[in-house]
Length: 137
Image (cartoon, rainbow, N blue to C red):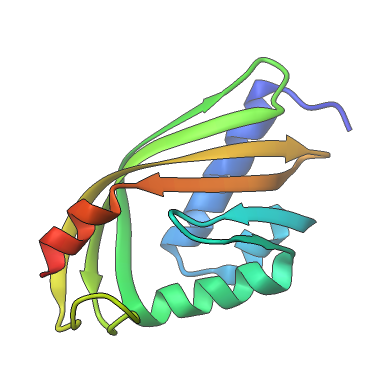
């Protein structure tokens, strides 16, 4: 499949629109079967099943909206990035972190992508975890 910047930006728009709608099926459809998910300050997970489980956990513990989204892609459409703010509420206590009781947070964040055959093959998400802990403490 020939890739280009416009196709990649459309793919990322579809992915983030699905995120906003909590539409996990569409998000998963945007991914390769062997997706590499690099979790901020956490493990590297592989495959759609692991990604789906991660999304269920996230939806349970956090209520998040992404704002000020800016998408970037190289000319070939094989590499891309997103910059945004995460506006969230902390709903369920995560192990090793402060107790959750609906605290709000506002974090600058970014994500980096590898694109293969018109699908997301890698996503790496970054934000300042110490800032998040300070905001919910």
